[in-house]
Structure formats: C-alpha cells, structure tokens
Image (cartoon, rainbow, N blue to C red):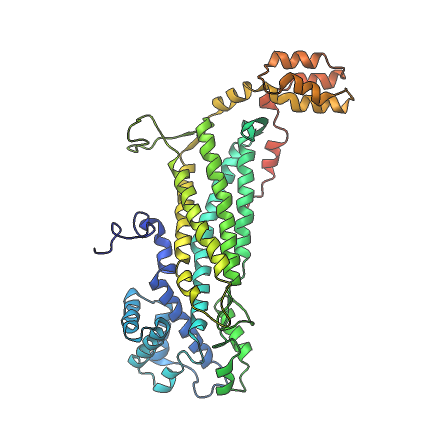
Length: 459
C-alpha cells in the first residue's frame, strides 16, 4: 500500500498527523539529516578559522555561499539527495559527508577543502550534536510554548474562580471545602516547576573523535588546542561541551531531559483525571460543539473525550520517555549501537506529548463551572464542619472534642440544625460560639482565595 495518513502504521503519522506538524522539521528523517549537515558545515567552518590548520584557511566565494545555503536553508530535495547517496554507502553519516563534498565540488571548491569535510570525526561526533540541536529546538519552539500556554490557561481559570467554593473529596469522601480556583492554582504551580526544570537541563555535546581522546586530531595537528577548539565550536551551536566521553556522548543529559518532560506529563495526567472526575460530578459542564457526537447510541451525552485522549497520549509519551531515560545512558564499553534506533523515536514521544497538550487546551475551552451544583453538594454535607468545631473546642479546653464530633457526624449526614444545636451546647466564649454559628460549608474555605492571589504572575 502507498504510505499515507490512512496507511501509516503509527497514529502520530496517521490519524494525528496534523497534530505533529510542528515537530516534523525537527524529528523526522529530514530533520535529522538537516541537523547533521549543519554540524558538518559548522565544524568545517570552525576548522577554517583555526590558525594552526594552515592548509585549510578561510572559506570564501561560491563554496562559502553554498555552505551557508545548506546550513541555513536545507531543503527536502537536499535530504532526498543524501538518501540517494546513502543507498550506495549504506552509511547515513558518510552519505552526509559525501553530499557536502559534492555540493562543494559543484561550487568550485578544490579537493583540499573538500577533504576537510568530516575531518577527524567519528559518526557519533556528528550524531550526538545533531540530536542535541534537535532536542533543544523542540524544547524551545514547540514543547515549552505549549506547556506555557497550558499553564497560562489554567492560571487564568484559577484567578477567575479563586473564590468559588467547592467540596473537597479526600479518599473520594466529602472533606473540608476548597475553592475551584485554589485547586487549579495547585496544578499551575506544579506544571510551572516541571516546565522550569525542563528548561534548566543543559543540552550537551561532544566533538572529540573515535573514543573521546582526540587521537586522530593531535596526530595530524599536535600544536592545536583541540579541547579548546572543540568547546568553542560546541558552544557556538548553543550547547554545552562535555569533556569526558567515550565514542559517544553518554546521553545522561538526554535522560534528565526525558525524565523532566515525563514529570510534566505526569502532573498533567493527574489534572486530566481530576478534570474528568469533576465533569462526572457535575462541577464542570462541557459546552457542546455543534455537529459533534458524544455517544453513537445515547444522544444526550457530552463526553470528556479531550481529557481522555490526553491521558492516553501522555501515557504513551511517558512509556517511551522512561525507556529513553533508562536505556540511553547505558552503552557497552566505548560504544555499542543499541542507542541508534532508540534515539530515532524521540520524536514519537514528543509528538504524543504535543497531541496531549493540544487536547487539554481544547478540553479546557469547553469547560464551564456549575456553581449551583457545587453549592448543592456543599449544602448536603454539613458534617464537614466537625473539623472546625472540634478544633475550636480544643482551643478552649473542652474535653474530648474529637470524640464528641465523631459521635455526632461519622458515617452519617448531619444538617445545619443539628450542627447549630450542638454548637449552642458548648461552653465557649460568645465570640467563638458566634463565629462557629456563622459558619457554613460554603464559607469554610480558609485562605484558599488569598492563596490564589499569591500565584506568581509568570505562571
């Protein structure tokens, strides 16, 4: 069958193909080749600027123009030519080297310049930096903007509903009230912390030869400060240099990146399940979308499908991310190739995450709180005031306060009259008694609204 969205094996290229569009130029085979070409070209330029490599010298004229065009404007046609070369070489990185040499020859470069392409490099010098650039670009251009949009949307809802009282449900049972805004603020704060931890991961790379010791480099040019040149080159790409590696950069930072991304996804999974539950309780109502069907047999239904879709995709993303974090830092001796096929799936995990983020944003856009439903739930659970009553009793030295409230309320529904009658029997100062008499479940929210006011502005 011809490959299309209908025949693709993976949903990220099939059913959800459009949802991963922003990641295609980054994580696709085209993207990997694009970054490899950029690394090869920038290394060649770095070598040309090194005074100790007198045989190379400055690259100018048409060769320089051709290199700049390939580094900054690499096309799908260019990538297709690399794949044609790879069909003969059966080596993907060598195909990139030959492609650049071919382009330089077409631009009139002499053989000496062409032969400095891929100078002293092992394939992993190119690959590790290509994947580093890939993950850095995905983080900056796609993942974090969506993560920040989610945080902003949830934070805005938190501020809007900071004073809307809502019954808590610890262990699934009625508990001390909170506000809808405070619960949303909790989520925004957690997501912000995980986003910031992902942002703080240093993206690292290496350019030091076959086993990380600059063996070939110093043999050819013993007077060049290769560690310094390598570090400056890597930093010019916006990356951090790792000076201690084998043939491969050990991928520890990729594990950190994947674990940080997985933690963000875990917090979002928690939110999706809670949002689903609040829809089920009626605390949230979902605005129906014209033409959309909830159930194929029950016409009345508006299902929380966006949060369900997000939960499923977050689970898929995290399964891969956890595997990456456990597998990639492990390599036999100086190099084995088991990381190669794993690294090619980084984009699959990222795309499942993007699908989930967009689904949550879509789901949030359909939600409206139902204050009447929340108020009714609070009014049906006056027994939750056992907590403040027994706490005030403790302050004023009344004997066995917890036990007395337990006898009155545990496992039963208690209405406002029974609560007030109990308060009237207590030997309390008038002010304290009146404060308890004025309490209602809806008014017993502590500092919830004030705490939302303290939510940082950048969340």
